[in-house]
Length: 430
Image (cartoon, rainbow, N blue to C red; front, side, top):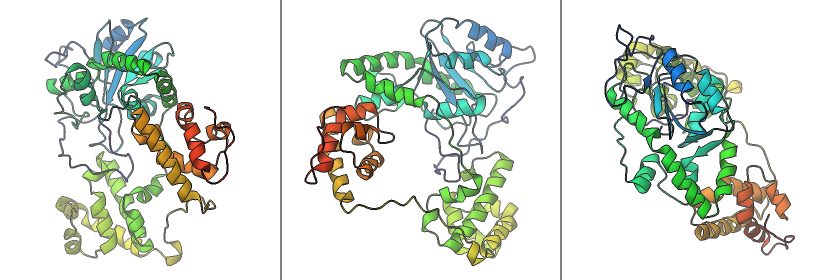
């Protein structure tokens, strides 16, 4: 599944055409079946389409004893206010696979046991969002993960999307026609099912090729550490009342404009929730920012704001204007502001030390043929510069720094950190 926008009001606003489906999410169990109970889907994946509890029970019973499975999910974050899983795709090496409709196939308890079984390796491509949805919808904590995207990055592969990797390793070209489809629609078309099946059809074979390359280059331990860190991935708690602070561009507003934006975002989120529609499909962020700046007092002024949907002005213009007035009416003493970042005493040598750390990181990245950000992010380098470790043991205590990063990069970082400013203690490999 392609990376989705953020779930908050800060979500990106991709130029995606609306593709509303014929059915609503949570459609009844007969949404994909004819009156006789047989699947109404046709095409090459009709037999593997699972949309009843009975089919699901038989399918998972057939997987007893397997030791690895490929998994992908399809959500509808480009279309729905709160995303959830609308389709699950599974593939195995020996026993085929299935496309599961979670709206009608039951609670999928057997799948949860499979994914949480540490003896079963679960292969994803770009697991982060899938893991968050699996935890949100079912409470599952997936273990024994292999992420082909992470593996590719650790091998220094710059084009690490699934389509690019399948073409690189197998000469397979994926059809991206349904990449941003509305997976909450029912019935699903044969073309959508075919697209969904592609996401896991070659994933186990890709896993084997990447794993072999990782071992050949001595980087299997790197990957194992990264995979272990994926376990337990879930949504971070966000206060809906602070959603306006997460809108890109909000920091450029005055405090009065920020108060107006707060009212507008709360209005938009309420409408989006009521319509079950992604927030950018109600009103885009840029239109809200311009509304906050201009504080219109009439429908004509509101209509003149670039990006403000005409239909929304006609149907809910008075609501928007009232939201603006609420923001205008906030007392000066109660105007919102961005929370202050934790204060830390800035060292006059900080910038120079950070620059030396970056040069050491970049040199090591070139030697290892890795993207510098994969080897060690700027955020992590800043944390090192603040903590000022002098020994490998102190360096290893920097939050978020991996053991493999410390081993590969630690000695160079310690030397760079203290170059010209004292001598670090024996920079042995950590």
